[in-house]
Length: 77
Image 1 (cartoon, one colour):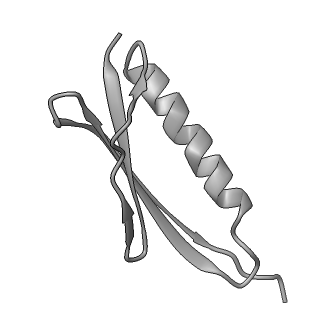
Image 2: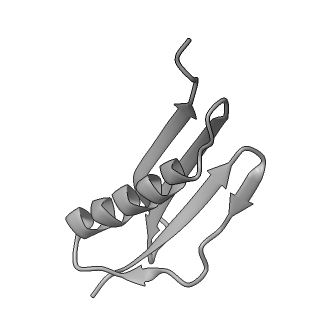
């Protein structure tokens, strides 16, 4: 099964994945990214603005997927 590495960046904090995950295909990779984004969104507080970038690479360090999301949570007036 192929191995994929999920490198993340939030602001100036960059985390390089050195362990990776064995996943069957790109659809499974997309599922893992969706779970990570959902987990990230749960931690955003009202009035906060945060950005998360996830770059996924394969075992040969080729980028296979890249996503960025910005959460700008504002309370209603």
